[in-house]
Structure formats: structure tokens, C-alpha cells
Image (tube, rainbow, N blue to C red):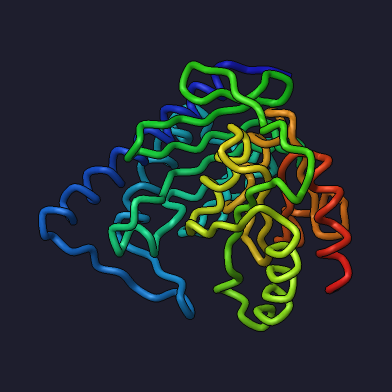
Length: 265
């Protein structure tokens, strides 16, 4: 099932959310500070999150008023539709608050509980990553794919810390240690959607993180899959959305990472 109208709406919504983010970022660099409210330990929401979310949901709802919506900052909208939009209006809020230039708007769409398309928009770099099931992954107007690195020893890995679930920190650090010693290096930038987008375009070779929410990875997972990569949970299955534990990258690199992760569970 391909539907250009769905993709057009996803792109328009992501870009509109990105415009809100970019405007606020420019104001911040001019000395206008962004107020933030803690949702939990090390977990913040800003008015920019809410404004971007309103813009995104408004655009989607205008065209598809009956579709379900699951978004980070609002209660879920349930209508029984086979379509569900999964939205992170500002992925990388802590980065945004501090002016660290790694944040994005992320929009995924599931159809009958299977991810159908994903869009991740980085407004600072004007980079629009998009993918639809069966149609490949694109960065702006260029077709992209995962890197050709097949050996974990040569792979650059991306990760994120379990800051919302610090009871898993020791387990995560044990995994980190094993993969750090086995790989070419590990980077942590603080935006899972951009991490997945970077894997999809070959800027890094694999990504792993635990205790994520669906909106953190829904869009990015589509990008990686349509770019020729693999996406799995830490048991090697497909329940990453449900478990919050995700591993994405070249399938051969994933196969080498899985035993090093699985032995800690």
C-alpha cells in the first residue's frame, strides 16, 4: 500500500513542527531562554514541544480527522482507525534546552499495527529523512542506504542512555562496555530519531538503546528498514516498539551485536 497523500501530510507536518523549533532555537541564541518543566528525572518538556505538537496534530487532523494519534505530550486519540500517527514533536528536548544542535521532529505512521512510513526532520540542517514501506529511504531528494560495514570491529555505533529508567543503568553500562571493546567506537548525541536517521544514511553503522518510547523510534525504524538495514529488539525479534529496546543497523553487524547484548538479559 503506497499513498503519496499520506507522505505529503507527514512531510508538511514535520516541516511545520520544525519551523516552530527553529524559530525558538534562534530566539534562544539571541538571549531569550526557553522555559522547561520536568516530567520526570532528567526528562523535560518545553512550551516549544507543545507548540510544535499542536502544529503537527493540526495539519494531520485537518486531512485525516478520524486517524488515531499517539504523541509524546498529549493524551492518545483513539477512534478505532487502522491508521495511527506516532509523533515526537521535539526529539532531543534536553539538547534543545541547552542549545546543543541535535534535535528533530519525528513522525511515524502505522497501518494495522505495522509501521508504514516515517519522517524525521532536522530543522537546523534542513535535512528531511523520509521512508515508506516498499519505496526506500530518502534524504531530501537523494536515495540513501545503510553503510557497507559488515564487521563489528570496524563499526561506529550510536547509543542513548536509559535516563528515564535508571534502574537499568548497570545493565546498560555492562552492554556498553562489551560493545565498546568490540567496535570501532560509540557516540551518544541525545536524539534517537536522528541516530536512526544517521544509521539509515550510513553516517554510523548501528544504533542501540533501551527503555525508549514508541515515538522515539517509530519513524526512525522505518528509515533504517527501507534503507536496507535491520531492526530488532534485544532478543532478536520484532518487538522493539513494545519493549522499548532497539538495535538497528546492517543486518550482519546486528547479528554480531546480539549475543553481546543478550547475555546481559
